[in-house]
Length: 127
Figure 1 (cartoon, rainbow, N blue to C red):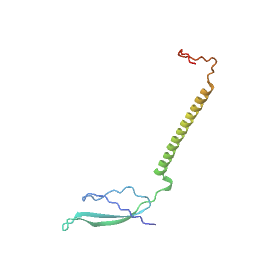
Figure 2 (cartoon, rainbow, N blue to C red):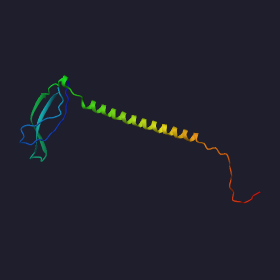
Figure 3 (cartoon, rainbow, N blue to C red):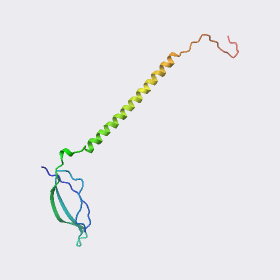
Figure 4 (cartoon, rainbow, N blue to C red):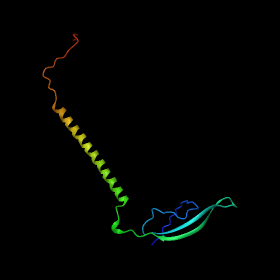
């Protein structure tokens, strides 16, 4: 077993006899020390004094009752939403390409045929 040192500070009132710790990892060993913070009368600086320390271990997590981890669920949702966005963009591009192809073929088939050409002049006779 390895030791993980995490510095955690929380200010609690001097009259408080208990407090509640949250977000502890299952199956880990913790060292908890309570310090008193006070104003040193001689130097006018803030000083600390150790009130007490305790070691404790959190209980192991039950394997059959584990739920999905938030990271797994969040990552899966990001991949699904990203896939939907990419698929939508590809469908949009495909539709635009099909419209462009139909539009170009439509205008190629409708070429105008000119049988009689008459030009209009302004009436001046030039040699």
